[in-house]
Amino acid sequence: MSPGEELRAVSKVNEIVLALQIAPMLVEERRRRGRGRPPKYRRWELFALCIVKELLGLSFDKVAKLALFLIGKSPDDNTVWRAYRRWGREAGRAARIIADLVSRAERPKLLAVDSTGIRTYDGRSFKAHFLVNLETDAVEAAVVTEPRTSDAKGLRILLSSLRSGLYLFHNVCPFMLDHRLGCSLWAGLGASCSRGR
Image 1 (spheres, rainbow, N blue to C red):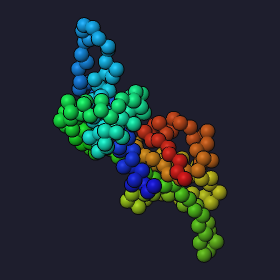
Image 2: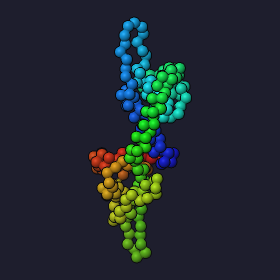
Image 3: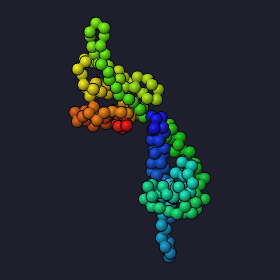
């Protein structure tokens, strides 16, 4: 999966999470009166499934199969169809608003970390550390250090030069994220770590 595809996948996940969070606020639950069997599914759960159908463009059957992972219940595809027949227009409007909100949100930058040793013709040597944005191929940060500087220390120096924001690190070796680096540094930057393959 390319870096751009990974970010689009993250975007779709964020849309689904937002749909599940916003659905209870948009649909009013009915008070149960009288006799009969109580409803099996809450109204907001079915409305959330309608929004997910609009967001992903899925069939009713696929939404019903996905429902177990989203709301913890597995309605029949006819149940989803009846809910969509009732709330389809509102779900479409909510899906457009959610997609617009997610597209406006700050997208995380996918960065690759690398370092290399360099030796000049006159015998001097040093080590260059880089953070490269994989979408734009732009160098986000670079630093030159002594040749014996560890990759973890070089990464710490690079991270201290970054502005706060949302960053995903690709192909970061586990030994670079040692216990001395600490989660507080990652949280302070507002960054998250994703080890690539």
